[in-house]
Figure (cartoon, rainbow, N blue to C red):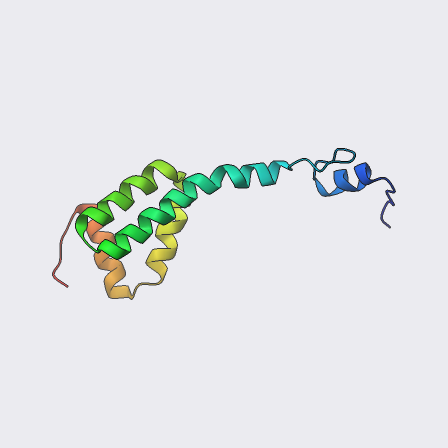
Length: 106
């Protein structure tokens, strides 16, 4: 059995949203989302440049931007998902290059 809430304030509180009579204020989740848009947007822009330039400088710039703009958890998940889409052969080569600085011919 659920509890019936009749007022808009009560309904908004039940979902975690913030409500002010006659005006909807931003919820904490929306405010957090908007704060991350800038830093995520910058990483996306850097990725676009790296893909378009396709040179070492572009990829190093992406690395710098991602390091400064993403949290460690975001970088971990980005790396994890990137490694998952590689073939086992390339996955091993990328791991070795990142871990020990080894360079293999393609």
